[in-house]
Amino acid sequence: PALPSHDGARLELALEPELLRNLKTLAQRQGVTLFVVLLATFKSLLHRYSGQTDIRVGGLIANRTRSETEGLIGCFINTQVLRSEVTAQTRFVDLLHTVRNASTGAQAHQELPFDAIIDALQPERSQSHNPLFQVMFNHQPVVADLLDKQLSGGLRVANLPA
Image: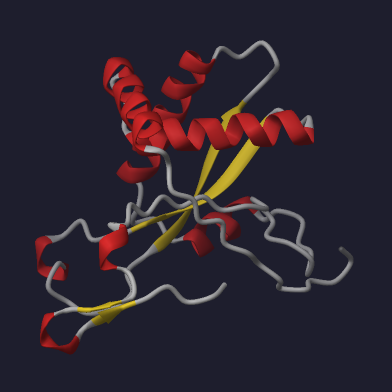
């Protein structure tokens, strides 16, 4: 769009136990994490429906690499760009390893602020979208039994609408 609507959405889905087991087995056999398997799947889907080969997805990283920050309350999260080339000829197993390498590279440089990347690259700016990626991917394993329940100490866990 010419102007941003700032509309967003969140897709929540629960994987069937058998599918989840199979994905974890695939991850283990390929020496990657479940996050990498899911992100590679998402990137394959983006390539298929967009026809683009330069697939850049935003991701979040905790950015708590120092032990002295572990007990602090605050937002240390940093945004990263996870970039991969995906073509119709790309084998999924190869994409898994490409995504793993991008992910581990991003983790190694997680202290580099996203704003510093923007300043260094100086991409063409637009009010309608982020200059480096259009979608974000986040995998948050949630134990369904904890949602919408009152926990000890008065803590209540609930989903909020997007």
